[in-house]
Image 1 (cartoon, rainbow, N blue to C red):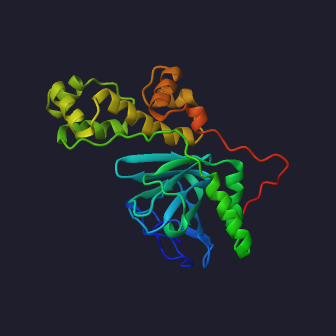
Image 2: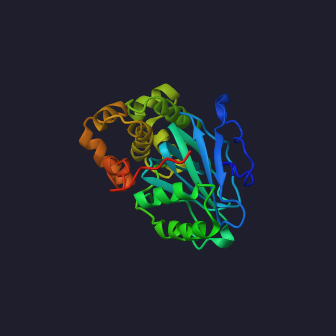
Image 3: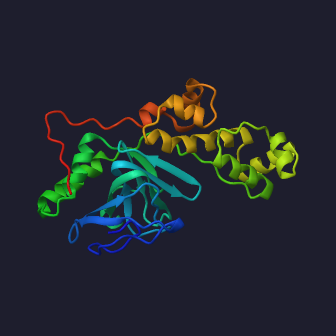
Length: 286
């Protein structure tokens, strides 16, 4: 199973992502046959993305190592190993790596899956769930053991209260120029009036464009943009203080407060590493 929905057992990467980057390669795909779940493992380099696609299976996207990003229409999730994203069948999406990653995605046959979440849903990845995913990636697992493990995995899928960080682009060409410049330098602190002299519109005109096209005032939109820019930096191990300065916050505390208001948890919780289960060998499945 490839990230772009190739049939189980077909090896090879997905199509190339934008910018000519090579697509990731499938490391393993097991669980074919009578299984309700297929496990696909994909090695991905920093900045590699798959093309937009959809498939007929539910998908649980998770990075055993590194950090994944998943985009759907208007939403972006950055997923450290402590979190995964449930993607319902038929949802158009794209997946990429914020850092060199090993993705282990579970693919569920909808007719054999009791989980019916209609929209993408973030779930916490406990040490037990992590071990179960690796267990199901073992191609030598017998059918009875696999069926039992699949049932426990479903029992472990519990939503967590985190929000996506949405910063859509405006359709107005002048507002888009402002947005593009801020994506390149989120710490730029110019006011809308100052931006207006650069793009040929009044500050009020730009404010109306942002509100009409993005559904939020410019100040809130810029906050979301800054948080989007911050997430890959935090995922890569940068300190909160360094990230706060990089994306335009005067202090780390102001950045943490903005992150918590938008996402639902502070950055230290969102990017907390998984704990190794006590008394158990940490098993890596090739």
